Image 1 (cartoon, helix red, strand yellow):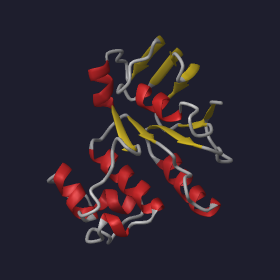
Image 2 (tube, helix red, strand yellow; image 1 turned 60 degrees about the vertical axis):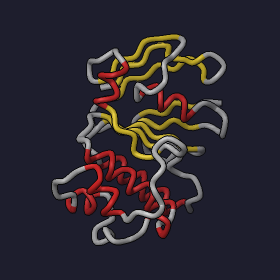
Image 3 (cartoon, helix red, strand yellow; image 1 turned 90 degrees about the vertical axis):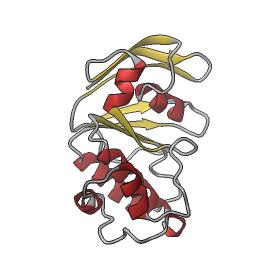
Image 4 (cartoon, helix red, strand yellow; image 1 turned 90 degrees about the horizontal axis):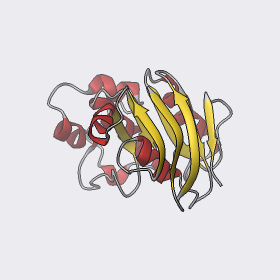
Length: 185
């Protein structure tokens, strides 16, 4: 699914090489300002690298990569409208039934909850639901561990590992289990 060789944006994050297939969890760990979000956006075809090569689902061009990758939650990029409900966000993107996806991400029965009433964990879960609507080959999620106690972080990592897609997710401290770890400093 993802093959990155010597991928970098000069002055933002160092060279990164990785391979990730369907059903794998790649974790990008590092402190604030380490380039985690920029790396994720590069892998999603939203930022152009200054070095290296990237192929996602066999595609090397940004437009094709963007079609194969869905952004689950990237603060400042995929921000949710706080005045809408969970269901309104989903209906805005897809007319077909979405209840199965809500159940899959742990938000069953929460269609009428306003986004401003969601805690951080449910925000991440809603971002994942929205990403799954696109039926992508790759899902990217940023700052999975921000503001959550360890047990809630673990619940999200378990959910990410259960998806049948290549998942790339960033955090400050990596979880105990992952398929691949990219550490940025």
